[in-house]
Length: 182
Image (cartoon, rainbow, N blue to C red; front, side, top):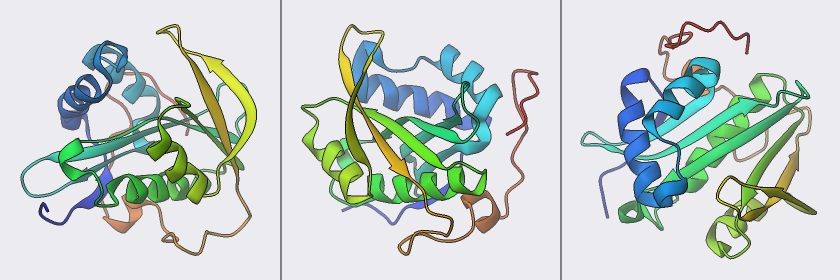
């Protein structure tokens, strides 16, 4: 078992490690550093990392839907297998829900491969529902879309403040020079 982890808002300097984890976890279908850098400029304030004193072991990448400002997407959530079974994914998921709720989201969506039973179970435990929708991904695979409808108050198991307020960090607005009002 590794050292205790904390969850904080991602910073630009974390993008290299997130890209490494994406490649390690998802191979050629993971987000590259270049793509992460562009996306971070649009929505980085809603990205989280789980870290200890030595490294970043997990991440969550969230953003607002372009077609409905009340819908948030968890675009990616990954945990290094050396930290599997230590509830890192659940901590990142819970914090992501808090972050998106604090920004006015009423619904959160996430995609999952049907055969990824661990992730599917994690999302179901958090209240995500399978509405039978699918999304065609760039790798040619279809993924299930799971949806979480948020109530007006915070979930019982989640902190009430978003991670950036809990940790009192200054989060850069963007690194790509693109203003985005989140």
